[in-house]
Image (cartoon, rainbow, N blue to C red; front, side, top):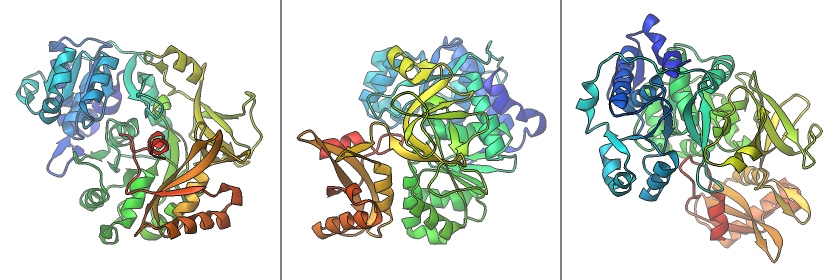
Length: 494
């Protein structure tokens, strides 16, 4: 099994001249992407990269990323990906942690981080500076000696409780989820055109905006600049995608943008959402404006991609839907036994895409990967129809006055208030007791009166004990490089 063969090369028989990848300025066919990936593979071999060596990609989204990625897996080496825009200390961490034989990046990123990159001793390929060297390689490249259970890609955890850890995945993990989620749930097909908010270094996007479309001969659209509401709306207008990969924060920002009313969404048949809880109020606003379903789901670096999701034509607002075919789940209580339907517990999941370990962390691997099961740390309940409802992370669930409070529930309530743009609720300990604090990015001016109004709002919508004991106003919520709210930073602010 070779991922380059499964996702890319099969297209050469039926559609070599079809556009595989579009940017704002160029189009690339499947034949051209195959040639470029072969050239990258040959360059890697010439530079000493062998099977199972790690290659670290630090690239903006575009054709070079896709070609470099498939060049790595083609020769049987292992891909590790990082956000290219992080500071030098993060480059030092990823280089030391992965012990990559080679780093593939771009000249501006190399120059900004030259000291730590050179100090690591890693071989460097800058795709813009070294393009002639890549282009000089042969357009034919033999596959590495790869099998279904051979390591192929490291996907990094979000790092919410420390530095990101590499989830080691094997070849079959990506094929399994593609066959079940992309083909059976999304019904992805050759005529689809994909566009995404998250960048390709994030496994969520590597799946939906590179692997999944090419598995069926569809076209992906990529852009190198930062994802903003204005950029996304402009690209939707330009590329006319059929599937848009999104996150709740960006959905909110797109609806608030003046450009939203001028954007034609008629080409879009599905919007995907993951990474954080999608508030019901936000879903309803999106439907009212666009008429396009949002398939909210949950996945993780540990499982490669989405394993619970709403299905096309069967969305139940406020839930994450049902299991993807081929996956199983348990909701486990503190005693290790399954809880009754409707009760909250920790989600355990299994399927054919579980990672085999966290690299370099045996204790965390043993705690998370238990035989066929992966323990997620996410708190869920499931109803009698088999629909899952997200209740927050295990370490985010708050016990206030002896009663558990879900921050997600309080956040959804606050987001329904017309003066709230975005918010996050965290627990802060004072004198041994937990108190809830709501951090709010307001629409308009923030005042003490608004804080009191928001507290009263929650009291009228939810059980009174769930109201936030304090409201703090921010210009923006802190987020990590995968777009998730950095709750630990909020606790330090308070």
